[in-house]
Length: 388
Image 1: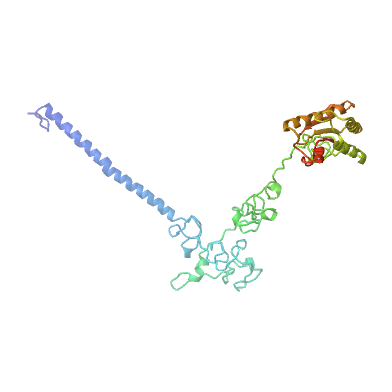
Image 2 (image 1 turned 90 degrees about the vertical axis):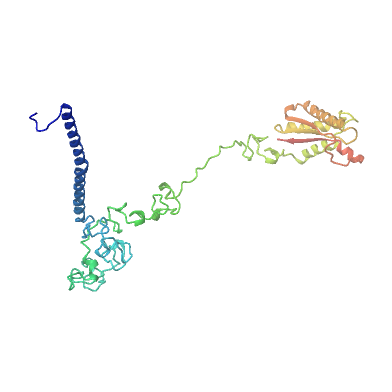
């Protein structure tokens, strides 16, 4: 017999016993840790949250005299009758909490009161700044005395005033009704819509009273008006003679003349000189079917050369014409040759060829009827034109 309180048949039974015991202990520890212990931790955390919530409820975050536990708007100052939320009974834009005249429509600049002008609005004998409740009569600095009902509660008609804590004094240097802390322009009276600055409808930074274009966004440099479009200066066009025809297009850049004559003036000739040109056009003739001038015609052409010498800056255009007798191609050649004959004769008189040009038109430009002898004679002509 063995002296051990646990009788094991052999070592294997003993080892199996201790292994089973260890397994039971292990699962017992798991049950304890993840069951009982965890639920206990959660209860503790819940208790801590409850304590914190209780602490918050006991405070007054917005300092309106209504504890957070009873305040529907704990972060905005309000009145007891509105469960601690802002209210504007008279609709003047000033919350009743900050409104010195909560029952009378007034102005922000007057802390919610109308223009009193040293009047006693509520007839309680307190005037102006001496009356803390300008629109409710009362003996306590213009406010009603705190009275209680049989149920030991404040009467309803006085609750709105009595529930309102002392109003903090807000600095407002420019007197526009907007506290300096919220006023973007604390030294300049303005409007709430522009954050305490004067009106600026086009939002260009130039206030309307100084803005020359209050409805159009501009710049301060232009007194609130848009910048003027830059004027693109065109490069000056060269025109030496000032006749309005640019030198690049002017046939006479040094003499003023109309655009119809390409900037060249008319050659100012005397009446007698004009007769010389007219006689040459009407009476210069050639031998039949040739480009040879008659002796009389030569004299007329030489007179034209004399005019060229008198007007050394003038140029000469010579145009040859024929009647319609004969072939058109032959007539065109003949008209060119006759004009060239006149040019050569003038050149022999000492006139520079560069001052002259010639052209033949054949029968293309008649001045009379080719069906008559007189008409054909007028069409057989050479025209001379002096020009600059």
